[in-house]
Length: 230
Ligand SMILES: [Zn+2]
Image 1: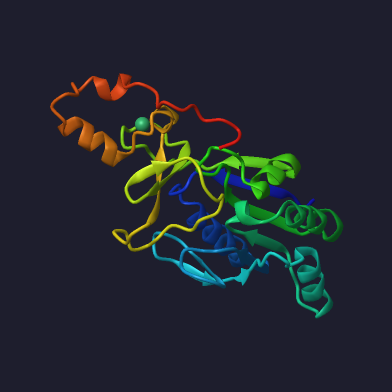
Image 2 (image 1 turned 90 degrees about the vertical axis):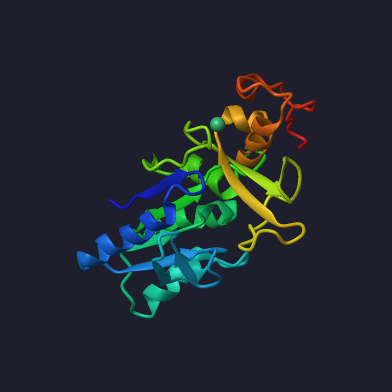
């Protein structure tokens, strides 16, 4: 029986590496798959991992109907046993529903990989629908760590070196930092996310004479609480 499985994690937790490994394991057993991704760090039509591996992939554009795409392959006589779908947080809710239909009506396994929450700690639409519809949700075992060593559970957005909690939901990080307006992401534990304490902020605070070392862990909450309207 085919399944819709959602492998979830934060950034830097090795999702894309696992996606490539999953494809490798299944194809080594003679199964044939299709690989989809969206806005991979290496560009269009490629699934790449931080460890340096990459494979060609089909780019999921906003208007792609995943059900139609798979049906077309099957109609053209191509065998499809499974789909590997990376960066699934960026898919629309409708595209996730198309994936569920592929599982149920074509008996094709779908392995989706994605980040659950955005830089405001709110669910991405694709991840939300996957959590709602998946047969199984599996949290990835390799965990990214906050600078303090705790489990990193949030993805903070850092613009020009300062953490922000407002802005567009999807902004791809800059690979060259130092540029003006450069957007970067940093994995933080919840405690340091709430305190807006990035590695850099922690370093500057530690160097500042008016902050005693223990203040790093008891520092006051930011003036504005995080609200839904953020
Ligand atoms: Zn921390």
